Amino acid sequence: MSSQNQINVEIPKDVIDESVADLQKVRTRLAPYLQGLTVKQRKSIFKMGDKTVPTVQKIDSYVTTNPEFVPPYMNVEEFRKDVAVVNQLEEVFNLSGQIYMDVSDTRMLAVHEGLINGMFYYGMVREAFSRGVASARAIYEDLQARFSRGPYKPRANKE
Image (cartoon, rainbow, N blue to C red; front, side, top):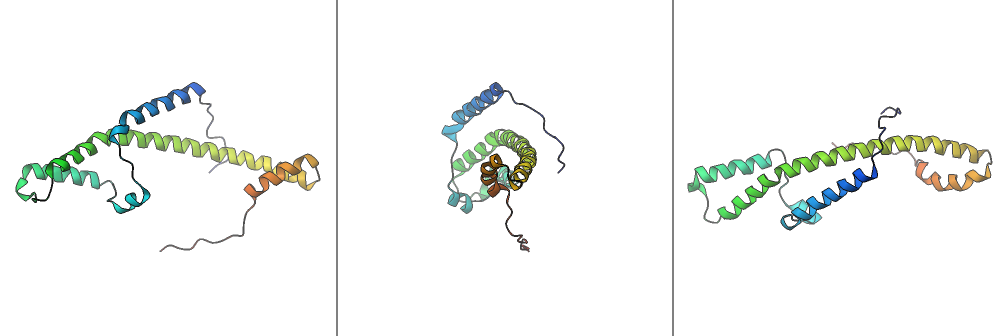
């Protein structure tokens, strides 16, 4: 990525404060209906992909049009509740995902550009330290661990 300045914004504090408050309101409003999962639970259940939601919706349609195939051990009422929640949360899911990606991308770009400028600063501090400038020592020692590279280790192919 280029070192040119690609992000040049200042977000007013009131915009951040109001946005956080609005998101907190959404979270509070939905909290009674949302379910958290542990890491173990997340690993053990079916994952939601592009095909999963339409599959559940299609099965719901078939349960309606062809009820003769509903097994006696299937709780149709609970199934329909699950499908309804999937459908209800779709818009919230999509919008929150878009917000997440936009915030993540903007933050990543700002960190990238900040680190590039930080590396310029660190380079000057390192140069000053190597020339014996006493006031550079504490800064150099503090930042050195963040900018020093370990030995090169090639990545193993995961094929």
